[in-house]
Amino acid sequence: MSATPAKTPTLYIEGPALWAPSLPGWELARAVFRGEAEPADPPAKRPSPQVLAPAERRRAPDTVALALEVAAASIAASGRQAADLPCVFASAHGDLGINDYMCSTLANDPKLLSPIKFHNSVHNAAVGYWTIGTGCMAASNSVSAYESTFASALLEAAAQCAADHQAVLLAGYDMPSVGALSSVTTSRDLLAVALVIAPERTERTVAEFDWSLAPGAAPAGAPASPAARALQINAMADALPLFEALARGDAARLGLPLAGGVHLQLQISPQA
Image 1 (spheres, rainbow, N blue to C red):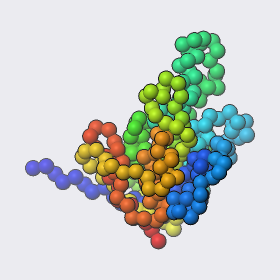
Image 2: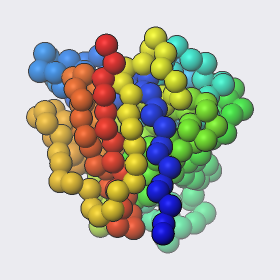
Image 3: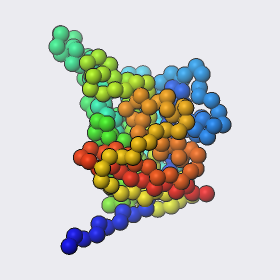
Image 4: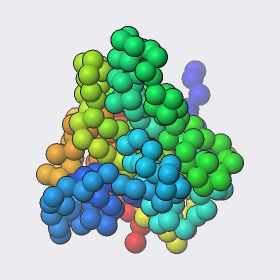
C-alpha cells in the first residue's frame, strides 16, 4: 500500500515584474494585460539596470541587462533586501547570441575570441552579476531546462522556499536565438519576468498559490491578451499566463510543462 504524498505548503507571491520591448515594466504590462493600455510604440530599447556600475552596464549583454532589470524591480516591489534573498535565475540556454559567436569564432579563428564575451558566455553570468552588484551572499542557482525552463525554475524556487522557510527571488529571461542554435531553440525578441516567492503572507503579497506535480503533459493553454500572445515566440513565454493572472487579479488553475512526463500544476488565488 503506497503512502499518500505529503501536501506541499501554500506559498505567496510578491513583487511581480516583467520587461519586454513592447511592455517595458510591470506597471505598463499590468495595464495592458487588463485591457487598460496599449503596448509601447515604438518598442523600448533594452533596459539599463542600475544595479551595475556604469562601465559594467555598458558591457553587460542583453541577458544580464534583462535579468537584473526585472530582479531589481521585483525586489523593490517586495520591500525586501536583495543582499538577504536566495535567488534562482533561469534561461533556456543562457546568452544564445554569445554562444553562437563563441562557436563560430572557435571554429574559424580561436585567437580572435573576446575575453569579455567569453566571460559572459557562462550560463550563470546573470546571477553572478546580480550577486556581485547587490552584495548577495545567499544561495544562488542558475537553471536551464530547455522547453520547460520556467516551470523547472519555479519548482526549484518553490521547493527551496518551502524547505528553508525563506523567501526566494525568481528571475527568468531569454533572448533571440541566432545562427545554428536557432535550429535547437526557437526564441525571438526579449522577455524577462521575476517575482519573489515567500513562505508567509505579508502586506506586499499579491497572490497565494498551491503547487504540485501532476502526471502527463500540461493542459493546452495560451496567454489570453494579444500583447502576451505576441511574446509567445520567446523561450520564456510559459511564464506569461501566470503573470497575466497576477495582473488581472484572477484566480487561475495553470499547468506548466516539465520534462519526464509530468507537469507543474498551480492554483493561483489573488489577495485583496
